[in-house]
Structure formats: structure tokens, C-alpha cells
Image 1 (tube, rainbow, N blue to C red):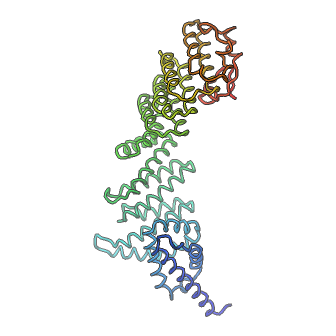
Image 2: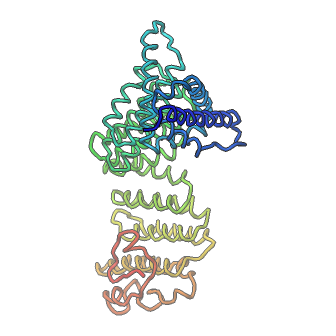
Image 3: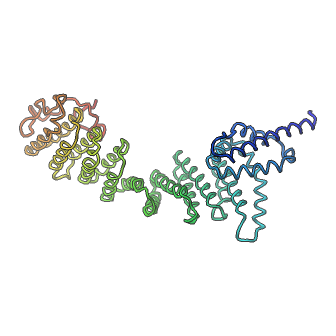
Length: 470
């Protein structure tokens, strides 16, 4: 057995090293401009060392360590860019974090005694803040340890309704609760996610409007948007009602109108009776949204959903998208995809009385304003959809309408697509006068040339007989 004096000297040397590291950390925090790097390796080593030293051996250095620890905490609290990686450092080592918090419990008990003995309405702010931070760290650790039952207990101890917490502490608490909710949502535990997000929302509601920071306002908006998405995933009757309540709450205060409109679209897409509201919000999104591939896909996705309820309203959205947005940026890929959707909608709908006139008007607009000719594949795909309608009219003996659709297939927009499209059905003699096929009705289907444009059957869910995409 080693002599006691050697063991004591060993602990003393370790404590001296820890004190030196603390002094270096203080130097960095006092000159937080970034000129000096935070000694993270030494800090980690000190943390690992101090939890292994018996409490009795720390007594001789207690005052010095306590003063340095308090100074580091106060300075780090002011330097948010330092405290965040420090928290990550500690919480990434769950066993170390647990030991440190167990030792901190001694201080928390002393804080509670002070608070219990305080007979005035105003509690010492430093004690309230440190006590609140302690319970938030306890809550965070329980979550990281997958102990949400324990996290509930720690939350009850730092509830803003029960404690006079500073605004910054409440915001930190709400931030942790928000992360727990997001974590539950990522695990598809939507009911649990909703509960933790609601707790985060309630925590921020305890802040008087004049005390909340800009960050708190942004956090509240993120929490509420996430809550709506979680309720949409849950899809129970109570969840949908709660989602609408949050939407109405956001409606009067949020500055991000587009994000709110997109949330409304998701809710309205689930309500088969809200046709005109769905159309109105979709038009707003078309006018506001930033045009990128994902956003154009989102719009067309909702157009397809709206089309199931009203092909006419879907056409007005497509016309607005094409004429007011896409043709102003002249993105050929977006124009082609939207144009094929327009042709599909007009050629297959039963409630568009003047579908040929409206389609021709839009084709004229695209031909006049687009600076690039349609690609061969897009042209061919559009003509296949139009020929499908020609065949339908012909089979029903409606030769005049077959002729109208045939003329649309010969529109200048398609004819001007270039010599590469010479294999298109309208160029190969598959259509005769008045839309009558050259040989027979089935010839249009069986002799149709192949197209490589991935739309009717693939992109918009319409199966074209005899059509195979490349």
C-alpha cells in the first residue's frame, strides 16, 4: 500500500495542474476576441482528473477552485460562442457530466436553503440563475441518457411557473425542450414530440413580451412551425384541430408569410371540402415563393392534389405559374414540366368546358414569350397527350372536337421544336383530316413512336396506353 503522503502529494499536483488550466481558461475568456484558442484538450483532461479525486483531498484547494469556477461560469455565460462548445464537450461525455452534476448538487442544496430563508419578494438573481441552469443541465443529461421520465422530474423542478427565472434561463430551457421534441419527431414518436414541443411553447409564453429577445421570438416561431408538422404527421382529429389553432395564432404575428402559407397548404390538402381556400393559398405561394427545383416540384405536387377536386382551379394556378413566374426566368426545364402538366390537365379533364380555348391561349403565350424552343422529348410527350384526346373524340364520333385537338397538336410551339422532332406522330402521317387516324383508331396507339420525356406515366401519374418512357 502506497504511503498516504505520496497519495496526498499526487492529488496536490493534480489540483495544481487543474488550477493552472483554470487560470488559462480565464485568460482566454477575458480576451474572448479569438486571439487565443480555448485549451479544450487541457480542459477535458482537467475534467476527467477532478472527478477522480476524492472530495476530502480537494478541501485544501476548495476556495481557489470555487473562485475560479465561478469566474469561468460568469464569463462563459456572457460569451455564448464559448459556452455552447463547452456544453457539448461535457454532455458528450455522459458519465463525466453525471459525476460533475452530482457534485454540483451540494451547491444546489445550499441555494435552496438561501431561497427558503429569503422572506422578500425579490430573490437573489445569481442564485436563481445558477439554480435554473443546474436543473436545465440535469434535464438535458436525462434526455441524452434516454430517460425522459427522469427529464420530466427535473423539468418540474425548474418550471418557469414555479421559479422566478431570468429571461435568458427560460430561453435556454425552451431551447432544450425544443431539441427534445425534434429528437422525438425524428424517431417518429409524434405524440411524445408534440408534448415536448408544447412544453417549450408554454415556457416561452411565461416571458413578458418586453423581456424576450429576438432569439426568443425566432425560437417560438420554430417551435410552432415544428408543432404543426408533428400534428400533421400524427393526423388524429385532435392533432389537426390543434394544428389549425397554432396556424391561427401564427397568422397574426409571424413575418414569414410564405412559411405559414406552406403550412396552410399541407393542412388544406387534407380537407376535401376546402377547395377554394386551397386554391387561394396555392396562388399566394406561386406569387411569393423563390423559384428553385424543389419549390417548383412542391407547387406542381399541390396542383395535382387540387386537380382531383377542380381541374379548372388547377388550370388557373398553372396559368399563373407559367405566365407570371416561369416565363420571366425562362427556365426551359420548368417550363416544359409545367406545360406538360397543363396539357395533361386540359386534355383529360371533364369539367373544363373551354379547355381547348384555354390551352391554346397558354400555348400562344409560351410561344410568344419563351426564348428557347421546347425540347424534342417534351414536344413529343405533349403531342402524345393531345393525340390521346384526339382518339377519344374520334371513338365517340365527335370529329369536330377531334379536329380541334389535332390542330392544337400542330401548334407553332410544337412545330418550332426543330428537325429533331420529325418522328413525332403528327409528322409521320398518323393523323388525317379532322383528327381521323390514317389507318384506324388503334393505329394511333400501336404505331405511336417512342418518347423519352418522363412525364405522363411517370411524373404525373397518368398512364398513356402504348406509351413507354425512356
